[in-house]
Length: 107
Image 1 (cartoon, rainbow, N blue to C red):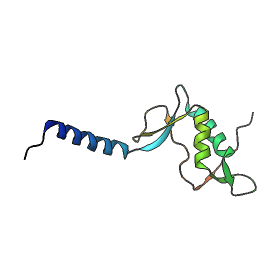
Image 2 (image 1 turned 135 degrees about the vertical axis):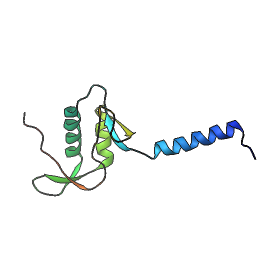
Image 3 (image 1 turned 180 degrees about the vertical axis):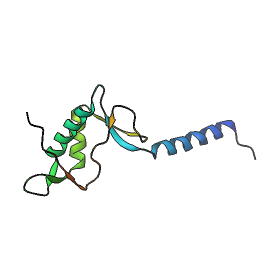
């Protein structure tokens, strides 16, 4: 039995789509932004949207939906990229584990 060319092309497209969407990790990008810009925005969004674990507010769990919305409101785009990511894409906080929340830089 021989498959029609259209069926083969459709099958290859589905396999390609399946493989491309299941690989990679999520990163954040913003045109013209530097690593320092992302570190600042990510840190501020994390601190604004954290459930703190200690009185000093040094450790906490970041509320993911609010954190992601905060970064999007600041112009960042989240996308799935292969590792290593292309230049200009940075790894944010993913998951609900307790993280160290660095204090904001002194002015």
